[in-house]
Length: 204
Image (cartoon, rainbow, N blue to C red):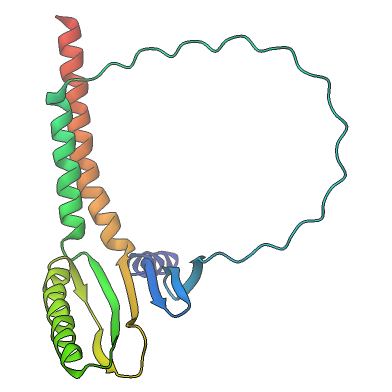
């Protein structure tokens, strides 16, 4: 029975979404961290209550002058032929990670165009939809977009153009672990190759 509970916990952790929710509206930017059903705000941070001022501490006698700091050892570089395979592993990881591994749970954008000239508003209306039309295919190359809501409106009485935007971006723990395992093994192999070549070179 215990192993069934452990398996259920592992499965739940594997599908647990982690990510970030970013929103911008009249109140300014809002950033929240997503951890499953829990969300907590990281920006703007809550203002801390002012602390009570403590009485000043008595002055301590001046300390003796410290000796001059030691000079740092000169930094020397490693072999670039050993370094390039590590760079390749890192770039492959980023490409694989960004290639539709992240899920956009919610993408909302509403643009309210301001102006009293119908001709100018009509031109801007078309430009706004064209910009959104170009944006979505680019996002779909990297993300799985689950829900999206794009709107463009015109307001002849408004003084300035307004925008509301929201993006909820998550990735499951299981996918992160799988990627870390695959590229962790690749990185370890490269490190072992470098270590082996250095030992071989030292023994010659």
